[in-house]
Image 1 (tube, rainbow, N blue to C red):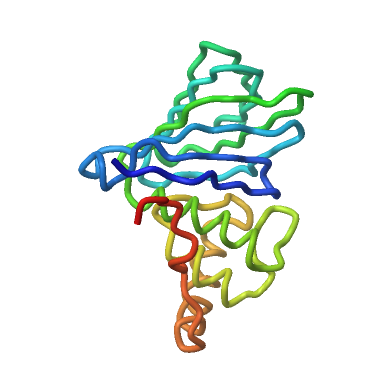
Image 2: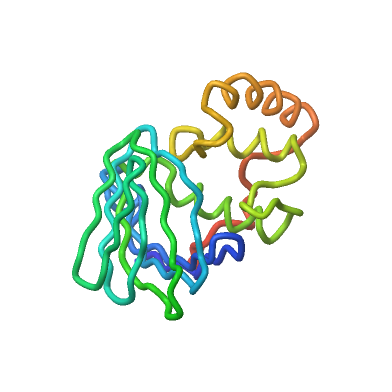
Length: 186
């Protein structure tokens, strides 16, 4: 059985531990235990090809789903269909705990490992994006099927990120580094 270490992202206030990945579910889904620290916020984004389901176990999470505010408490589930803009936050004073599932799995594990790895290894903006434009292009274009921020607009990202991705490749930058792997059993 594969076990995973905690992935922490100080920019979003998230702490996640995978329980199921593409490797264990035949690509059907990825699932992780999710904690959001007080004050944590995940900027508006979309999952172009994945449905996302948040089941809140404790605390109170605030969401914006397709521009509409929503509050979810323990025992409630929020489902975000593929392509729908959404954000999550914890404006409260206690940690929010929940379970998150994305269908299909795609490279969800590697994407979240990359976000935590970028936060640990690179100078980042307040939203957690690497300040190095080549690293930004390498990682965010590579994982464009898993998640995309809604700002700047997707059409701007579609113009800017591919050339940055190509330059990053030429410069030897990688979208994902092996030491970001959160599996603890090899």
